[in-house]
Image (cartoon, rainbow, N blue to C red; front, side, top):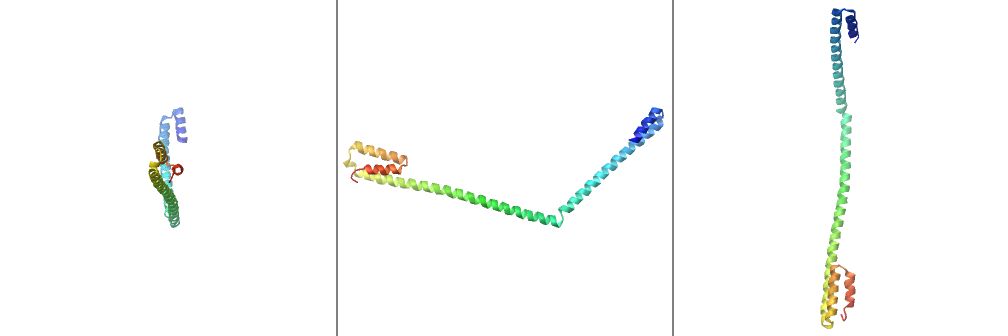
Amino acid sequence: MLLFVIGFLCFQMGLAMLATLFYVLAGKIMLLALGVLLALGAVALIAAIWRELRVYFCREAAALRRILAVRARQMDAATLTVQESRQIRYLSHFKRQRLLAANNRKHLRELFDAVNRELQAVRSELPAATYKALRKALRNHHKRADAEAILALREQIPCR
């Protein structure tokens, strides 16, 4: 930059030839400085990359990475085990609920059939309106899946 200032001062004093020489010289020196700066930056970058690669591939770092990978796999396996057991518990609970509902429907159907047979057995002894009312109530209780109501209706059937 000093050469540019000297060239400017020479130009102001009327020494154009000398100013041109200083300007050309200053331009070349600036270009050379920029090149040297770029070269130093490239060398520093290559040196940093080389250092980092040496650290990355050293035995201790590789052993540490293997240990961390094994630990991560163990943690993943533990998490997977917990999730699978939770899913198995959920599915078995769901299956138990389905089986319980099916069992309840089966027993309700058997109770309905038994009370219906008892009602058929005393049909001739009951007035038609009473029989129809009991039969309708029995069907309604069966539709609502109300076992207690069916048992209470059974108590209403005379002469069992």
